[in-house]
Image (cartoon, rainbow, N blue to C red; front, side):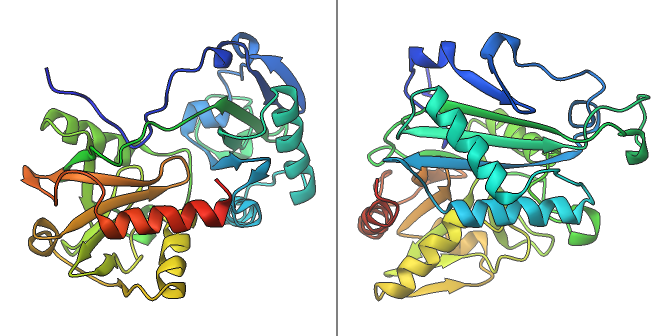
Length: 301
């Protein structure tokens, strides 16, 4: 039987059975952490979110995540109702309540709140936003030796006038359908193209290849403005590694020496295979490993 892999695989931790979840200012047990069926996030996917990683008592790139959260809220005309400092305090409160000082992952979600009637109009959300913080003990599975498999899918990253791919919204159905298509094709996750047919991103992470020592990633027009993505680009520039943000095709991707994904959860995840073509030796190559070490030093992991 084929092993199923994911860029979000984590080792099982029984402590997560008893975590406390922050819901609108209250810390409640996991089995009591609920929102209304009228909530706009549940009903319409109307909300924004951030994923954050805790390393040795410090949230990686915290200011950038909070800034992106408020940018997303402004884009969808959602009033969060809390200041940046109050959001940081809520994160710290949740970490303390769960005894978390490292190897933890948080998903912070803000929706437009409950609706008075079950319809689309955002004016029907009249009682203020819903905010939830789910924080889990989380050690990513080490994929350095055996990467994940990608399949190119027909689902493309959308044009900004439809739904800007840079918006970290609750509406993720396009990416979910892409992931389903990849799994139906026998892969783990999806490689998505942009509307011009160039390689853009995966359904859940940003995508990089390495060719002849150079690191390539998309021009960024149709992918998530990933914080880990930018950190890797910056690390390349700071450490004498050529990094190009450019259009490139599947032909150039298939013949890459290395490929890897970036994201808050897994940091850097190597790619073993794309559309049945083996990439390198199926694990992390030398450039990926170097960037992984540089990244760990940067975030204090």
